[in-house]
Image (cartoon, rainbow, N blue to C red):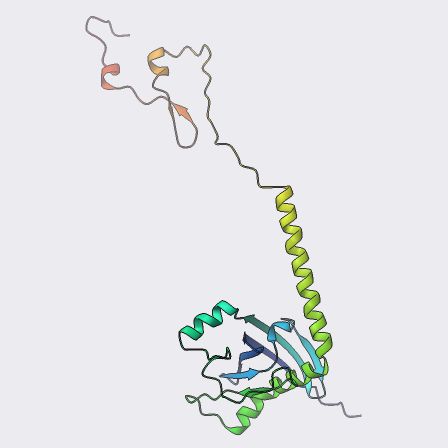
Length: 219
């Protein structure tokens, strides 16, 4: 009995920036080359460690995406890098329908020369991802809402714990030396020094202390 051939396995790292629409500009690599595309799906809704299987193979994803807020879009518009619709001016004028079936369009790269076979191989996982998104749209949105709720609850718990148990303010340490009947002459007690390590010591005698006074017999 012949063994069935192993299913193709794909591991793809995708980064994305979500603009108005929402539209996502995504980047990934294939065959050592960089690729970019515009998708009409909000990539922040996807689990960062997404895994799924289709008829075409098994897929494992590492997804990192973030949204550009209104202030960021306004700043980019003032700089001329984003159009009135809130999209980068480098995007083509014709985009997949916002809110429509999950689709993407590949962005051209004038500096790269790619064969049709290379492009087909590079976009195949992205196509599989969008087909999976379209087939599981409701579940993806519900999962994203659940993750957002869990994150908000975690942040609220941490804030409540911090309010209930604020970090203690340690008072400045004070070093106190008690000298009780040590037999140390008073003139030396006044010269006790505290080292940076917290040790107490008396510096060596000064020349005046080392030399006996005139008329005083040596010990």
